[in-house]
Length: 247
Image (cartoon, rainbow, N blue to C red):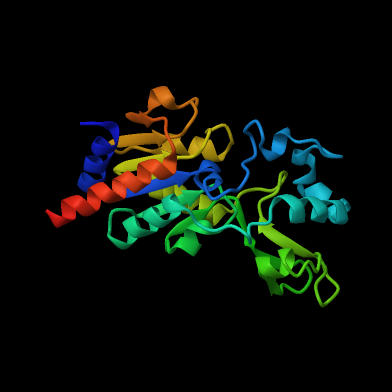
């Protein structure tokens, strides 16, 4: 039995499967990640990206933040890939309980997933800090109106910037999902970003599986490690599950 067949059998046996994903889930849609060789953090800017994407920088240099944000974090020209779609299909067919994501692109919901816990927020939600008015990503990116609300206040993307805490309610729910799961599938993440990576310590179930092209600090702690394209793996998982349903 190969690795994907083993994972398929564990999914079938599991009463509660949770998926925990990172940037690698969306790079197959064409988005750049942050930490790879050609990722956002390895490009040259007037300020370090970690500084640009901080709360203080947003408040003090909103125009500079806007330039970077519009240029590097626009997801409106991209769409969910096979991984997002298979995860949504798995939830619909009762193979998956929830998705916990470090990504801010909103592609899991676009693909049809209902139970999505976004640890770092979403570029698809933007709110005026003065009046609370909502603006979507199309307004921010395509209409290019900047971060000024009609009331004169500043519109802030609903993403967790450096120096900002994660949302307590989402953190609690994510930890609960992981700690009650039989099977935890971790995909497309280097597991180098904290506190998110630390969530794996709350898993108490049967099997933890890691799908990632490169090695991670957690490879030796997992029951199964698959170093391959995450889209390719999930496409085969779906085929296996459909095939077994039809038998």
